[in-house]
Image 1 (cartoon, rainbow, N blue to C red):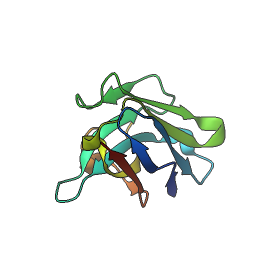
Image 2 (cartoon, rainbow, N blue to C red):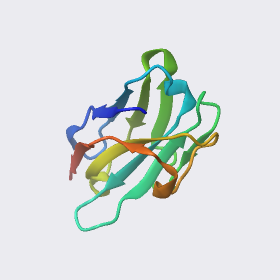
Image 3 (cartoon, one colour):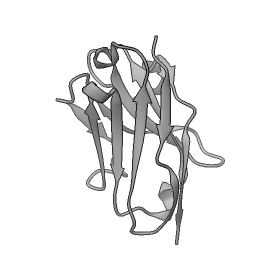
Length: 124
């Protein structure tokens, strides 16, 4: 089992940057692929980015491709989401999730453990 805690959210102006962190407990963090999802008010939770166990494979939603970068440091049991060129439509609660799948998943159903989320607000 793994527990996930997100941090790094906040309020930023359009065009700005934030880096989110997803810290995991447990000594088998490298056994999990990790994904980031977001949920805006009144909308369904959507996929943002995902990374494989050792970071060799990454996937991105089209809406964030070229602006967001997912990475991981297994020695620190942490996954990061660097978000640049932020837009008001990026405003949402961002959550990370862990999956025992050998490859990263884009579907919510592919994840076994979830964090509580961190709020990101982008002002225009």
